[in-house]
Each structure stands twice: as C-alpha cells, then as structure tokens.
Image (cartoon, rainbow, N blue to C red; front, top):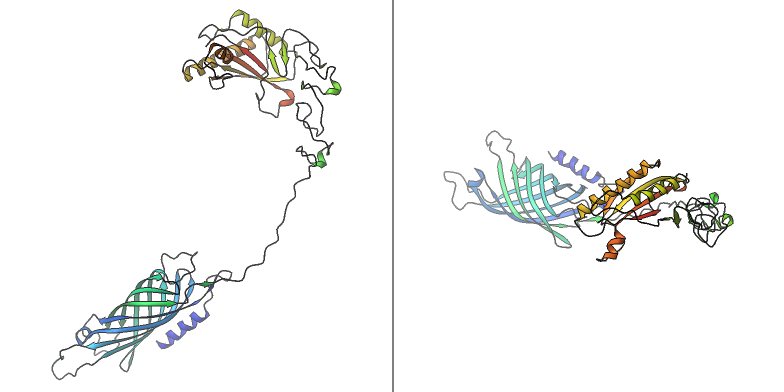
Length: 413
C-alpha cells in the first residue's frame, strides 16, 4: 500500500499543466483541523470525541480536477467508563493516514484562476497506522472554499474508513470529522506573452478620382464620373448642363432641356407635340378624370392615354412601366388603397388596349405617399393621381420606378 502512495506522489510531480500554452498551474498547500469521532462499534464504544489535523498539497490537472497527497493525524479520547471484565482501559487512540486524493470541482469556471474555491468533492485511498499496524485506508470529503484574498477558507466534512485485514477483529473502523481547512498559494501564473503575429493588409484598388471605378479600369482616372443619367459607367464626366440626358457635345440647345413629345426628341431642344416630357416628367394638358368613387376612366382621359400609348411606340428605350394609383387622405386606409389599385389597373388595361406592349404592372398605394399633407381641397386635388414610372433601356441595372417619368391626376377620391 505504501508503494501505491509513492507511485501516486510521483504521478503528481510529473503531471503537466492543464494546457502547455495556457496559464501555469501552481502547487496548492493546505492545512486544517477539526473534531473527529468513531461512528461504528467497537471503536465508537471505546473512544469518544477527539481532534484531527491534516496537511496536503495539490496540483490542478485541469480547472475542475486536482490531484494531491494528504496526511491526517487524529487523536480520540477513551470513554469515561471501563469496558469491564479483565480488559484494560483503551487509553487515547491514534490514527495516522497517508492518502492519494483526487478533488473534483463540478461548477468550476475555466476563466477564473482560483482552483480551491467553490464546491468540491474529494476521494482517495492510501495507508493508515493504528498502534504498530499498517492497514489500508479510504477517505472521502465534501467542502466549499471561500476566497479570502491571500488564503481560501473551506468548511470540510470528511469520512475515513480503516480496513481491518485480521481475522480476529473483522470490523472496519469508520471515523467522521468536521473542521476548517486553509489553502495557500491558490491561483495560476501567467505565461509569457506570445509574439505578435504578422498582420497582412489587403489594399483596395486605387481610385484617384473617387468615382467608384478603379484607376486600372477608368479611362479618366483623374476626372470623376458625373452621374447624370448619361454614360454613367464609362468613368468620364459627360457634361449635360440642362440635365436632359443628352451630353452638351451632342445637344443643340445645351442650356434648355429637351421636350420628349415625339418631335425631334434627340436634338436636345424643347418643342411642342402631342405629349411633353420635361426632366423625366410627362406633362399632360388635361387630367385623367375618374368619376367620384369610381375606377372608370372618362372619355377625355382615354384620349390622353391613347396619345401616351402612341408616343411610347416612338421610344424603344422605354422597356417597362409601373402604373401607381394614389388617393387623398379622406376615407379609410384600406378602402383608399383598394380604390387606388383598381384605378391603376384600369389605366394599365387602357394602355394595353391601345397597343402598348411594354411590360407593365399596377400598384395601389392609397394615401401612403401624399404629395401634400394639407387637409383642404387643393391638397386633396394634388394627392388624387395616377403616376406612370418608366424604365429606360439604360436603366436596366437600376430598380424599376426609381424616378417618376409621368404624372396623371384624377378627380375621384
């Protein structure tokens, strides 16, 4: 048995730390004392309450598990009455144990350096000496460590069992003790800092003029692209003073915007025709009128839609349309939204009937997108409308309907 304890001690001394690259584990030293008493016959009948003292050292194998060696000495007094017969007084009883102990901390926090704090369960085995005899011994313990700064104070309850190997007295001795234990040198030591790893920085492609095009792909790396709707992806500024989508070099009237109306729409000059589009907004002489609370288009409105369909046929760059219905703020939101959707679908159907073949969809917004938040007749007139947003060929990569291309107003709700 003493050989087994020696082997265990050698394992503790040779045990590595919990992690080679982690904190360096310390040796924990403990010392304690308390009261002890035998709890089974015949020892409980022969001996009374006594004192116990212990010492040990532990090392953490991982934050929740420690391995160590303990030495315990217990002295118990004889009972006041004689055992009777011809038996002599038992005198003071002594018990000395040397055990290899394992300690488990079920609620250990790996981020906390302390190794002796909190709830712990302990068990071990070794040798015991009583009188002149060596016997096997088992030991178990339950405690809780409180961190007091330089030391850890732990109330501990322990149980020891000395195994009787002789045939004449087969009963094992069992001793229970309760006391306090102090643990010193608790914690871990920091390892030397690791060398900094090299930092690799990926450089973004250089863009001298900050127009979103890398210099290696930019024909004009020192002149920023002007986002004006005209050749916005070539990296070079295309001056268009009147913002009509026709570069000044190709614009016969660079200071006056083109009127898109089916008459010389590419010369850059304003003119008159059936339908006018100024700065992306279709201008109509009369409103598209609906009857009150109705989605039926009046005859005069149908004439204007016919003109729009005819003009759209002269603009192959118009590749899609979204017809949006809007209402004023009178009435409930759900009703206004449903009415505006019916009106948008009516306009969509009329344009289809006039031969307009570009993809179209209808949407109803009700009072969600008011132009005027006033509560008067003029505000209601502005808010009652049908807008037609046009997607042009060069806007294929943009979302349909990002800019209003036409505006029709109605006299309904």
